[in-house]
Length: 237
Image 1 (cartoon, rainbow, N blue to C red):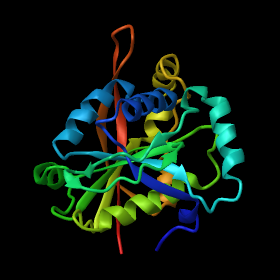
Image 2 (image 1 turned 90 degrees about the vertical axis):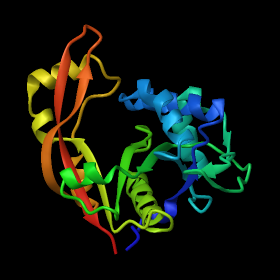
Image 3 (image 1 turned 45 degrees about the horizontal axis):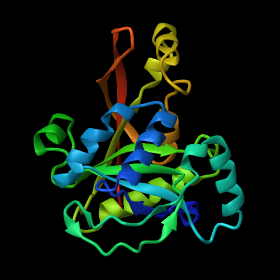
């Protein structure tokens, strides 16, 4: 069932062949605080038909969209210039871009992992689609836009050609943010305080089915910090 917030946002495919789209993705990952250094590799994945990102933008039906966009741009002036819908394909499937201008307030990605990876986590394959990298501008959080984006991207995952019956994701675990040494080290490196979104994803209907080391964060000083992540899943339909 679609979220009551789904009407507030729309999704537009990221154009990995556009320098403007790639630069904006980098800027938003810097603002997010995580994995800005991986954007170049995401471009290469997309060229091969792999992980695809979607921009999250305000729906034209949102009454205060211009006021909210102004709030976002005031906090992130590098994002003031609109992008255009120019992506010519989604996972190598041709599409007709609209060329419509928009200012994205965040992004989210869909991906299909290998059958071996899914099996190792006890997930059905085929049938599992992964959601990665959800980010909503920190200037706009609390308005239901992340919830709306999740609802929209889950609906996309369930459609052809992905045909998801299960969506999966991973997120920093509560145990990680309960460790003061790890939190202190991460907060010295990140542009925003480290938090766990595990509780938030539970409220979106996800359940934790496994925990383990899922990401190694390397500090500027060369320290490697193994982060425990919560693997979460949701049955669609």
